[in-house]
Amino acid sequence: MAEIKITKENFNDEVMNSDIPVLLDFWAEWCGPCMMLSPVIEEIAKEYDEKLKVGKINVDEEVELSSAFKISSIPCVFILNKGEIIETFVGYKTKEAIVPLLENII
Image (cartoon, rainbow, N blue to C red; front, side, top):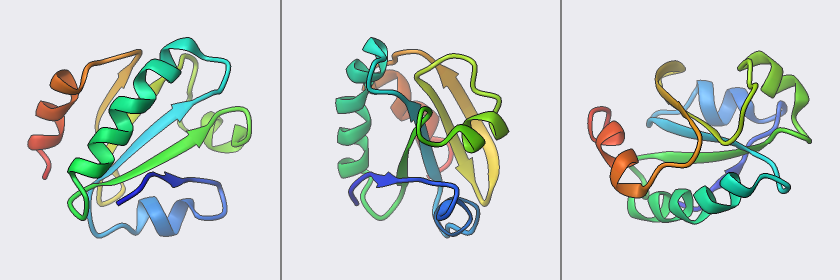
């Protein structure tokens, strides 16, 4: 499953009402660590196809969602299951560091 652009318009359908766990990546184009994390998130999206939904939220475009999640540093990643936040981390992490967080949920 490809990454999905999450907006306030599709947030409830894609995230809160998802039948599978959701990884949300809060990012910005000007953020160096976000650009480093992006290919890792893309690889996870492909590898966990149909087991995990991966959403990208641009903090500059989706100020309301960023505020709702109290984003103060990026990249910031949330892993949700049935609308409940299960895991969160801030900053760059390798795929090897992220996968164990997913394995606990999937």
